[in-house]
Amino acid sequence: MKIRKILLAFLTVVLLAARAHSQNDKSAANSSRDSAKPFLGRWDLTLKAPDREYPSWLELRDENGHLTAQMVGRWGNARPLPSAELSNGRLKFVSPKEEEDSKTDMVFEGTLTGKILSGTTNAPDGKTWQWTGRRAPVLKRTSPPNWASSIPLFNGKDLAGWHEDKPGAAPVWKVENGILVRPDRGPELINSSKFEDFKLHVEFNCGPQSNSGVYLRGRYEVQIETDSAGDPASQRMGGVYGFLAPSPEPARTPDQWQTYDVTLIGRMITLVLNGKTIIDNKEIPGITGGALDSHEELPGPIYLQGTEKGRVMFRNIVITPASK
Image 1: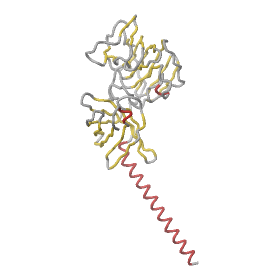
Image 2 (image 1 turned 135 degrees about the vertical axis):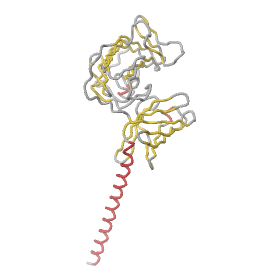
Image 3 (image 1 turned 45 degrees about the vertical axis):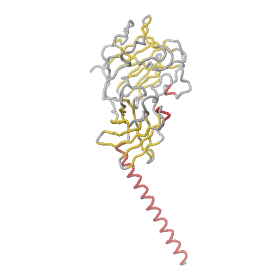
Image 4 (image 1 turned 60 degrees about the horizontal axis):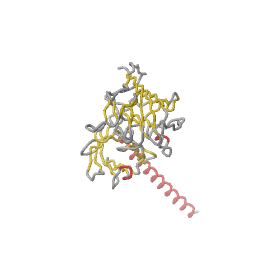
């Protein structure tokens, strides 16, 4: 009997200790989550190199008490990061060197002061870059827009109203027989007007093994390609690059004229290819690689991607902006 009482007492002590340990773990986890809350969500980043500023984007999440990060760097698509941690109010996340064209991983460290994330990173040029982050705007509209009159962005004659992104260089884009032609790997072609919400009509012809895109507000790329069959669906024809995949996925049809009709209201996009809806009122989470800037709260231009390979042609580019 004494042995049984001793055993019961021992088990009671073990159970109480286990419960206390579990409660301590839960308290620690809750405390960790509470400290992470101000950092969670989407951030528009700006990296300040000596020669220019690079737009970037970051999303931080709490997944079962573990901090995870997704990032759009200076180029490319949204991708999960291998490491993100928060310690004593200091954020640290790592972008692999393979993604950054760097000899070493880029290690970002920063703190949150008010509404601004800021810090430093070791850059590919061997220097230390400053970076800042502002919480990405929701861009939620409270009522449907009224549409203004349609505006032709391309006159079929010349590059009036457009400029290439390399000032002073000889023009590369050409107008041939009323068609806007982009030779292999040229500069970006940017419209001089800026827009908030709009409907966009554009016709394009993508050569074999070619790649281009239409950037909305200069920040969100709608992909045009005939060379990315092995990439994820969001990086193929009809995708919002790295974020939204088309459904159904369209066939690749090189050397044929096709039509995009895009409606962009806030972050919500509807994309119609050749009369068929392939993205139906979906949210674009953030900027895509190649964005002109990360200031998502501002109007921005339409721009046509020129840096990828192959021959791509455009015509009948018409925008219908929302009226004020």
